[in-house]
Amino acid sequence: MGAGEFDLIARIRARAGTRDDIVLGIGDDAALLAPPPDRQLVVTADTLNIGVHFPESTSPADIGWKALAVNLSDLAAMGAEPAWCTLSLSLPQSDPTWIDAFLDGFLALAARHGIALVGGDTTRGPLSVSVTAMGLVAPGRALRRDGARVGDDVWITGTIGDAAGGLAHLERLSSPLLRGRLDRPTPRVDAGRALVGIATACVDVSDGLLADLGHICGRSGVGAQVDVDTLPASDALRTSFDDVHRLALQASGGDDYELCFTAPTEGRQRILALASQLDLPMTRIGRIVEGETVQALRRDGQPWQPVRRGYDHFDSV
Ligand code: ADP
Ligand code: MG
Image (tube, rainbow, N blue to C red; front, top):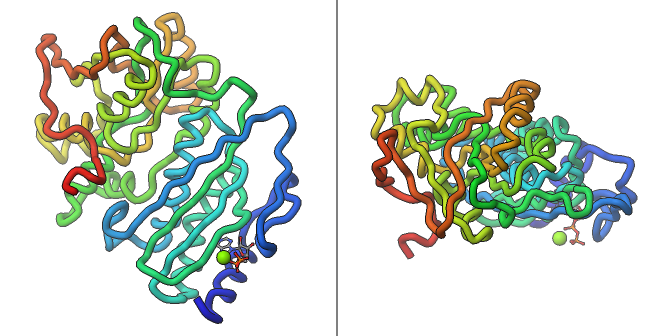
């Protein structure tokens, strides 16, 4: 990116956090990290492209927050403790003001979770942000998608549908809560870590609840039933949409970054105790059954037909 690239990297380096287990951070050809010998390394990467993963109107600080949040959410869904991350930036121009604002959002969330920025890449091109996040988990303890068993309950953290509601109302004056959930998702890192040893399978809701639960079913070789009338909704979502639209947003809208997990029925009390301890609602929304599909059911047991099943980037290709 020419001379500007080094100025930008210097700005990033000056503000990146540190940890005792970083032997060498930003500034060499690669970072040197010292993972503890008694942990497995959990690695995930996610890219945000302008107009696809965030609206053009998103502020630089919110882009920074969200780029890290979606990766922390993947670590959370694995039950991992965040440790290090890298940041690959494609920018249309070398703009220090933009970088500073971007870092405000990115580093505020990083500090909250003790994750340190140890490297990356800076190039010129259409605005795109790619983060790789690394975390740690005790050997064999990670929350995977393939552990759900017939008879398990299906649970969801927090409320769902808010981010999709914020996106649907982008052109109008949407509720600040809904827009906030779209722009600044809260990765459920503490919940994911606490669910190790309790949940049998876990996924974060990024593409839509039914689609993401379908990933657990596919990997576990089971089916699921979701009682759509039990899906937890925020007051903001309830007042912004009628029930038909709200249910569609909740069942199929993405970007909430809540955790959907399965657990044996014996775990109910423990999960509810954990929810109150973390001050984060955890709601039972269905069950794992034999089969291979995710069925959405109304209160009367009749099937509910979703308007669309999650978001597929290659839907229209
Ligand atoms: P190289 O050409 O050897 O890949 P660079 O000039 O791209 O090195 O990067 C120099 C240093 O700055 C490296 O340590 C790299 O990891 C870091 N770096 C570059 N861009 C970023 C970024 N956007 N965020 C964090 N670190 C970065
Ligand atoms: Mg490079």
